[in-house]
Length: 207
Image (cartoon, rainbow, N blue to C red):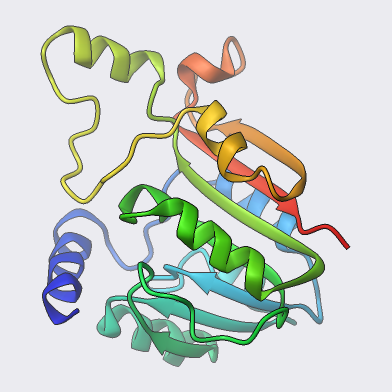
């Protein structure tokens, strides 16, 4: 676990600043709306330094989970959230049906078995609770052209999976009301699936 932690700590330092939020302002707006509140108990999986968490932490009871203890401690000190150091490929150390919202932002592509993490999110959500997340739109036109040119579609070495919209719908099959939002990219309004850089998803655990 320490080896994995160091890998992501190095990745965070080299590739992103602590206040970096991928695909803002669209992601910050959508996550804030979908998490909602106040008064919600929120589990934020892969919260990193808390840059995105900050947009839905106020008024909510947030528990952040991350593999990078340094980033996690930063988020806890700055936002006053509860924090748990954990590998998200392991079962979540929380009781069944204890959270109103589970957030999985830019995490699924890094996980060995994403369907297991989605299953854990389902388990810890209360009936009627909300799953909110996002992942790169891996099969956007830019990546297809990279592949045709003989290059990897994604150049991030920590990405283990590529997701298309159909893949996300399959992962969310046990949830009700799955919704996909295609965001980020100047040409996204013309053809969301081809040009959006990110897919934000949300779904509800049946009551």
